[in-house]
Amino acid sequence: MQIVYKYILKADEQQYLELPLYSQILSTANQGDDIVLYALVNPEQKEIQRHRIEVYGTGHSINDANLADLKFLGTVLMYNGELVFHVFYE
Image: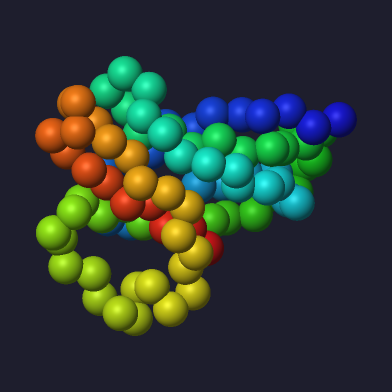
């Protein structure tokens, strides 16, 4: 059984998200005042895999070494486009 779950992200540069093993990260969006990540998960899977998530605002510097193992997930507009964040994951 697979279910799409929502996870709230912080606007910090780096954070970790623990998902059931074999989960598939799908997308990112804003919901109200939150940056959210959607993932397809099997809630019965007891083993956990830790994913590194990095969120950067437009114009913020990013160390090239930080991006080496990351995939771009998407761009999130907050507060009618006044703040723009870019989400990467490992």
